[in-house]
Length: 318
Image (cartoon, rainbow, N blue to C red; front, top):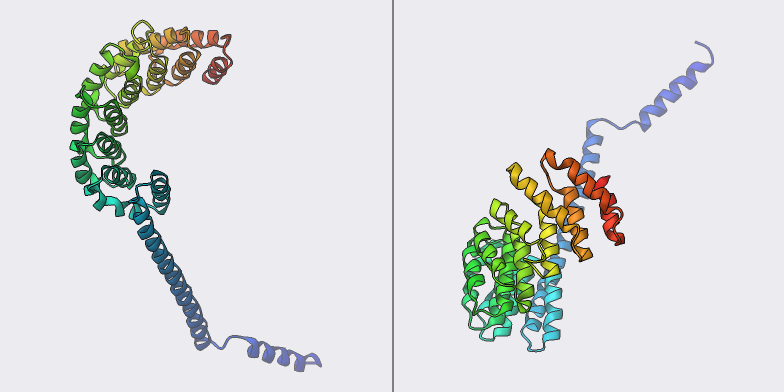
């Protein structure tokens, strides 16, 4: 075997000494790993528990700050509660029945920010509140809650000409969030009424809301709003043009109508309307028969006097 044999046996013996001793060794390793995992889990649970207690303590303090009369201090408390999430915001639910109107309004906004529809019934009651600020806050909150049950009450509120503009505007903005087709007739009627400069914010909110409704009637009204003779408010015309970017008319005739309306709006005196029209023309699904006409209009817009119209046309043609 030669002189190398003893050293070979020695190496084998050394390897055996350094090798794990089988099942018992693996069990010890597994137990150690399991122990480490348990320690990590316990530490995470402790940290989470401490953090939860801290958040709860902060929310309790902020709920007290929310109830002070000072608007700035209350506003800061509301911002911080929003940062703590839905659990902290939901602490405002009992304040929906507070005696002070300013507390009911603050509570409605915070509860709305939870986004939890189960709070909708309590907020719905505030649409009948004697204070207009509370009614406006409740109307705003219902849209954020995604409360389908609020569509009819909000639509009714929108129709009440005796309601303050802030209340009706809040109702229109929430209807935009709820994207309710059943609200379309009321929104259209509002927009077809004679334009009043004092109701500009309301009409703008109604236009946005109508843009979320996927119906033939809504699309027809939006195209009509692009006419300066019909709609003097530049912002309303701009919003109508933007809304048509998401219109998908089922009928070819209406698709042609949308395309022609947008091309016409590209000659509007207001550059913001032209920008919106160019952008929408590049996005909306138009009939194949409109393809060449649409492209020609976009090519023409590349020479517009307004830089951003030219940029929108370049983007639409890519």
